[in-house]
Image (tube, rainbow, N blue to C red; front, top):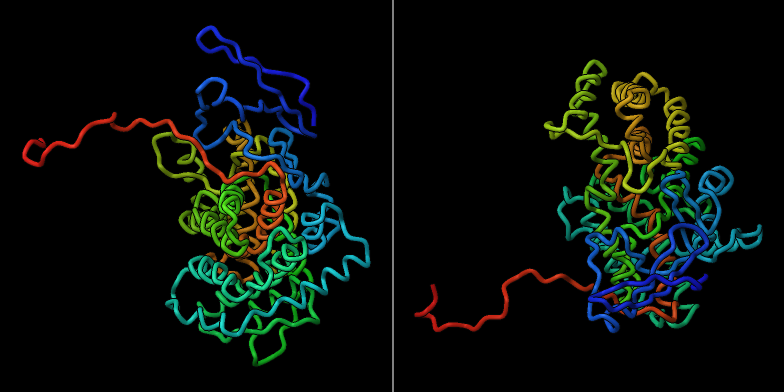
Length: 431
């Protein structure tokens, strides 16, 4: 990382120099950590759209190129050649595992998939119709009450134990939230199944008969996990880092990330996309809603199109589109009403000059929602699936932050615009 260049800020005729830092990829940044001390001023950046909050080696996004890299590897190659646990190992350790490391890591995760039996009783405290994300926030946060034997986070081994527990237990917790919601009995994990097959067994299996995962569907869900594993410094990742900066335990930090992800502008986008398709209702109405989306005076928005970061095609969407077609073909759903509607919407949006000029391409949420619905996952569970996958990125970012010698507790500044200092008047003299 280079800091040879400087940027000069002039305030009231006085000039101040600040180092310019250059990373491996992406925009250079001005190091303004000494700004307050030198000038008495702070910067204002609502939403932190022009602020680098940290140095990170985990993920890089080039929105103009439509590029997503995990530890330098293109997402296209990882999704095609690796399974989710290989990607999890990569994000955690910085390198892809060799054959022996892969086997050892997968075995370790399998041995941590069960949860403490008392934790299952937490579910009974929720209404049966509680949103699964509400359950997730509570149950994941409660993990710290059961697994407090490895809480010295200055110890690498303690961090590894906590990270492995979270990666292993999230599928069990998500599946239990689904089972509780449907009134079906919880299914214990099976160590003879791979990570994603085991999750599908816990989601869709029953004690009545053996569940046999379809390899095409397992692969589709595994790709979904990989595509959602990390995405740089987004809202939920920043939430995990901010919570962790206080020294909070990783279970509490991941619970905070889940709560942030629950927001419809973040993790709930694929759920909103399916709701939009239901609102459109039929292929014959697609043109009508396309025109509504173009109308600035109409509140209707085309969900699942465009992305705040990607100014080109979302690379995850390209992969998810292929998976979507494979799943629909495998299940014979090419002519299903909702899926025909989605494909027609995609076709028109990709050809319509309005969407092409504005680069409002279908994003990963558009396709992942369709795939998950085809797999039998209800829309209320979509964000839980997202949280399951993103936990790998969150916990990696958490460890990167707390092991950074420069890390400090997060403390954003503000531009105060409230009332000026004033004195309290006697009650009889108040207006």
